[in-house]
Amino acid sequence: MTNINIKNKIDQLGNTMIEVFHIVGLFIVGGTIVWSATHEYLQIMQHESGFASLKDILLLFIYLELGAMTGIYFKTHRMPVVFLIFIAITAITRFLVIDMKSLVVNDKFNLIIMVTSILILSAAAGVLKFTEKKYQSDNDY
Image 1 (spheres, one colour):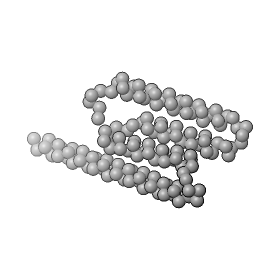
Image 2 (tube, helix red, strand yellow):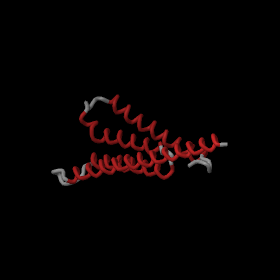
Image 3 (tube, helix red, strand yellow):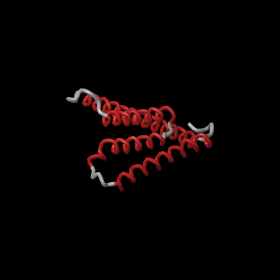
Image 4 (cartoon, helix red, strand yellow):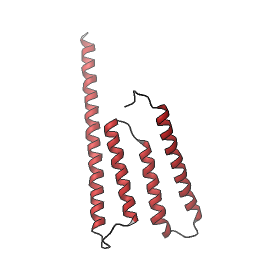
């Protein structure tokens, strides 16, 4: 009987340590996102043009999605993978809008790759949302 009691206490200690690590890790990640987004925002506002460009606004949306993803993971202990897909779509869109014009104008292959990537990521997000609604059980947390 004593061995079972010791094993249960060790299991409880292990579970508590995992939970503490989980919470501390999420606070570190969340703090880093807030710190980086704040730093980026202050740099944007101090820019000599006096306003935020489309590139800057899309970058702030990426930070917003990272923060939302961290918050959802903190509350539910589930990784919202669809947010990673949204971040990827936003990053590709940012590249298309801002950086693509600096590439060779006749480089249609890269443009097709980027647009196809957005299409595939959008389809993947749709599949994830559909399966989440259809197959989610009440026991998921």
